[in-house]
Each structure stands twice: as C-alpha cells, then as structure tokens.
Length: 161
Image (cartoon, rainbow, N blue to C red; front, side):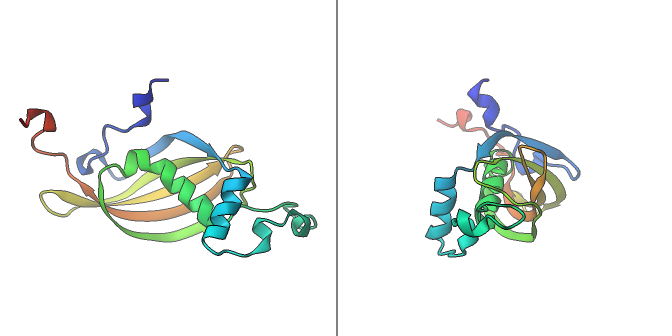
C-alpha cells in the first residue's frame, strides 16, 4: 500500500458534508505495556486495569484497557481524515464506552459528519460522531467531537515564492 493513502487530502472544511461516513485506514492493537503505562501515567489506580488475578472471577476474566486509552486511540485513528486541518478542538460530548477492550484487542475507527457550520472566511465548525470497533466488529466507543477546521487556502503554497 502506498503511504500517501494513509494521509487524507480532502480534509479542509469544504470537503465535509453532513451524513458523510469515513472508515479510517489504520488499526491499532492495544498492547498491555502501553495500556498499563498510560493508565498509571494519568494516575488511574483502579486495579481492574492491571491486576489479572483480581479480574479472574469477573465476566470478562482479565484486565481491561482504561477507557481513556480506548478513546484516545480511536480519536487518534480518526485524525488522519478529521484532524489535519483543525485550528481548535472545542468539545467532546456524549461519550459512551460500549464494550470492554482487553489487552491485545485491535481497534479501528469510523467517523460520521453530523453538522457543518460556516464560521468565517478562514474556518468553519464541524461536529463528528466517532466510533471505535474491535477486531470482532464490536462497537467499543462512541463520542461526538466538535472542532474548528481550516478552509482550503485561496492560494496554494506552491504558488508562493
């Protein structure tokens, strides 16, 4: 696969329309070391994220990935198409963690454009709904993100001397 297929070219404000849905190209396997390290870095001391013995008798049967890590990975995967032209992040709302994520699961991201609002000559507001799914197509995350996105430049950089 050509590396250029990983970077969006149509991600300025004008390129988004309500109802459009994007399946983002990359997936990310959540390995135990990074998930536990990030959990500890943000001071989440809930043992269900790093104590397999304690979790043995639960319905899941093993440690779970901290939801903040799940959310961050899904939003990160979505950024190739929805974030390269962001000027300002405004909000994350209606966040739902819908299925458990375990160490070793692979996450994929989808985004839907909910709303597009013109702002000024240089930018506009876009509301996205992001979805994260695991390798078995279970929806693990859903959330809405609102951002100010740059409009397409009137003059391309290649024309500047």
